[in-house]
Length: 243
Image 1: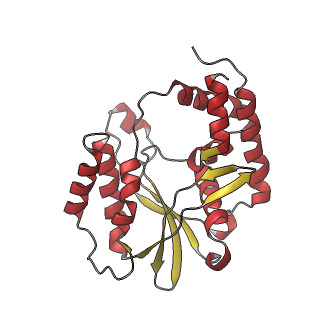
Image 2 (image 1 turned 180 degrees about the horizontal axis):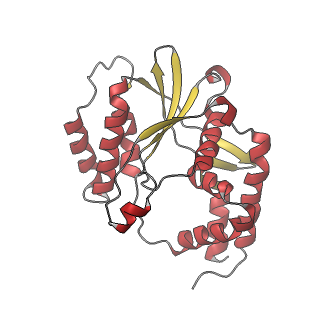
């Protein structure tokens, strides 16, 4: 079995839902080429920057409460030290930057945060969209599932609607059915001609984006688009490995 085939099968079984949302956003006429580039990058491997240390620190950033532990929330300075120690020099700058940006965005809102079992959205037999959201927030009488998005590249509005709809269908169910779903978007604003001409550095422009009721995309509408991604990945898996 070639590398393309193995990687395609791996992605079919467990694709990151952010990448799935972006793939679904791409027009059907351009989706094959987009997925081919995505698959080629995965096959070639190599060392890509990772936000895994940021992800591990998310419960700490929100100040998740556990049992009888009455410890005060971590300070900004202690958070920076905590993430640096976890990184041990690996992808330190981007993980610390994302962690402090999220801290500054959400801590003033004084959420109460609690553990929540991570959930995946089933997409078929032994196939899931991996989400990895592991806490729930309470603000007054409202329950919120808020997904921190640490990448610097800003998502298109439609990708955000798809992403939040996937979270809704996976998390806002059963006794959590009325929960709000949000994106803690830590990305940079879209580049403008003036900033590009002046070569200004990209600066994070954090915001919280909430899924509005009329923006929720039903699973009936998502299913054929997701199936299209799966079919294309299977087809692309039959192509020769990239040189």
